[in-house]
Length: 115
Image 1 (cartoon, rainbow, N blue to C red):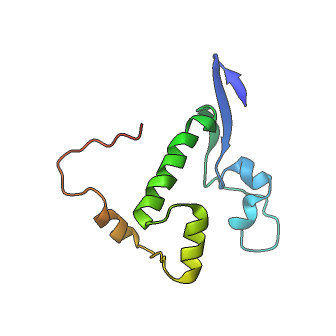
Image 2: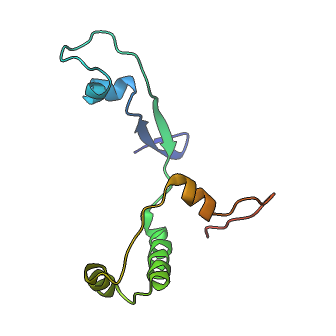
């Protein structure tokens, strides 16, 4: 982390940036075993504003897990584990199209509040 103009920033380095390739990620972008002398950036690097501690998001995460367990019909993580391995609880894989169809769609406008 570093400060610039009184704002706490964090360095961001995209996987295809020159900085990342110089630190070893070039293997993803060069297919021969020889080191190449010409590197072309396929990503960006820069800085993003620090959003603070994760502690303020933990209560929302915990509540989301509780709601999900309630929807699945389990009372605890131990109960979920037992039902999963007993065959009483099953999960399904949903395609991106199914996820989109299962969400809010077809409305002219809607408001989603996270907190």
